[in-house]
Amino acid sequence: MTFPHLIKCTWTKWGYFLFGGACTLILYQLTNRYHLVEPRLLEFDVVDHFMPFWPWTVWIYILEYAYFIIAYFGLREQENITRYFYAYMSILFISIIAFEVYPVTFPREDFPVDPNIPSEWGLWFLRTYMDSPANCLPSLHVSSCFISSFCFWKESRWKASVLIFGSVLVSISTMTTKQHYWVDVWTAFLLTVVAYWFFFYYAKLDVGTGKAEGASR
Image (cartoon, rainbow, N blue to C red; front, top):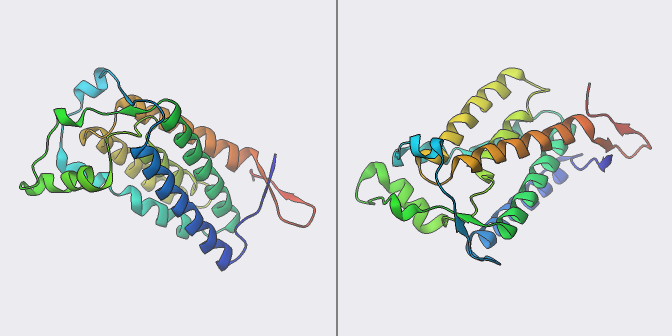
């Protein structure tokens, strides 16, 4: 399967960055607040019961926002940036569909936070002004970090390894901040693995010369 080679110059690089960012912000906020059916709660499993509630880990949780910048502007090869863009956008749209078809919410009221306590203020702010308890399954937070890590594998194994380690910490923080269930985490990881394999190892890019760039080397 062949896809257009999108990132070819500085203008296209910035253009698709802004397009992807706008899609993420608009689509996530819409599905986070407006639902076709009533969001449902899930039962806690063994991992959910095991995970402590540590509000201060929200500072690890928000590292996700840096991952986008690191991946998109840290990759050296335009081919890999294009593949990263396709992989991320596919994850985004699949997740958005899941949020509408099978909306899942989290019982945050069982884990209150106090804005007057410094270690809890960050999580209180996130919950109050940025994010409703919906959009749980799969965790777009987790998938965004892992795809932003895997995309470095062909260019720099050590960069990819460091970012993957950070993604594991972020994934844990989604549960210690009581933003997500364990099922949200592992389903997001599986979705990321499939998207990464498809766009980095299976799909080809049309370079505009009648030939296509292969995914593997």
